[in-house]
Image (cartoon, rainbow, N blue to C red; front, side, top):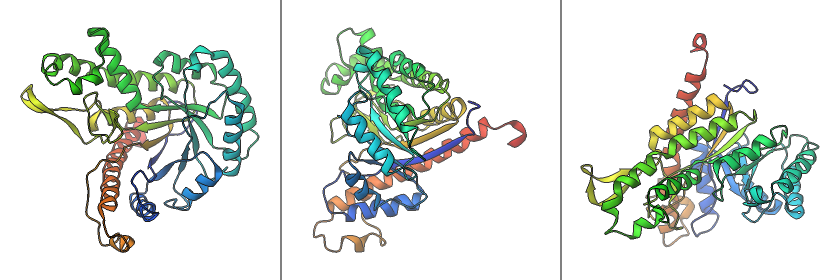
Length: 356
């Protein structure tokens, strides 16, 4: 284990209103997150937006991470100003801020390294400053992404956010295109006549993903800094998402097939419960100080409101969206229970024998 930190694992869930409706949806989320003892990752770009969401913070003790807008840019002076403003105003109330990576981290590496050093020096002046985590989001080569953090390992306030779903889809695409040059594995979901012929190659590409993620975790552990994770499953053939992406899925799902493959009409996702357990165990062993956000998206599925939630929506004639929110929250809660089991197992495996 990274000796710089005692093992610590914070757990959070995606906390926002991705379903149309009033703030009763957020109050329902607050109650469900509180029941699950789960922290909250909130999308916000201004202090006003974050203030509005913090009103629904599950509890004063619940960890909070603010996910910044996609157009925030590490090397942009205006973005740096907004980051510093949020870090200063919410110091002591936020565990971290998440900023997307950018292709310019490779193409204009020196500019990004200089910007990171300047920003870190300014963040260091803020008492109880949150960490700034740079998320793997635009599909960089993994060596380039990890190499950037190798180059800034001395910067105490800036570290990485590993989105295992984004890494997984990128690596599945790369593995499949190595077998079928010029072809996109994610396009196969709309090519039903071709899919049975290449299903073995799809399975091989997907099965290669977990090892690549574990390698990235190991490498970033060498930077001796806290690391944030976005946890969600996925599969190149997935059509579950209402947002058209192949990931951000529950670890408890499978992909249905219209044909039989290896005696079944479904295939497992990139990670599944066992794969999640391996990622968590590696994170605890290689890094120690970690935080995990379940970044699972809602679907159109519905779950009837329980007695404690029904009164919240007494003024709603149509409860469809409330039931969709309730279903989404139940999926997050089930995955959170699975995550807690994985953390417990990972901490036990990482503990000295005399302490187990």
